[in-house]
Amino acid sequence: MKKNTGEGIRQMIEYPKSGILSKDISSEDKIDSTLFCMAKGTKMSEHTSTKEGIFYVLDGKGTFNLSGARHDMVPGAIIHMDKNAVHSLKADENTSFVLFLFD
Image (tube, rainbow, N blue to C red):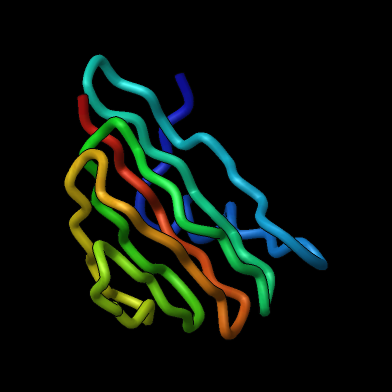
């Protein structure tokens, strides 16, 4: 199991030329955490997750659509997602966030 916190996570940020790069941060019994780095202009189409989640935005600017509501993705933003909630994302700039998923 690999653990990173604080500046260690920021040092893991690596933007691809296009698309999304994800890196596992840690996996505990009931919590998984993953760093996502989205290149400017990247979109993630509507989908759901079978787990509850918390998104913590580290860097960039984008839009998070969650169950029909728009949320700004800006540094420091925290977005709670219920399991099975329909959501999509768009990165207006290179954008990174950590996703914590709970069983």
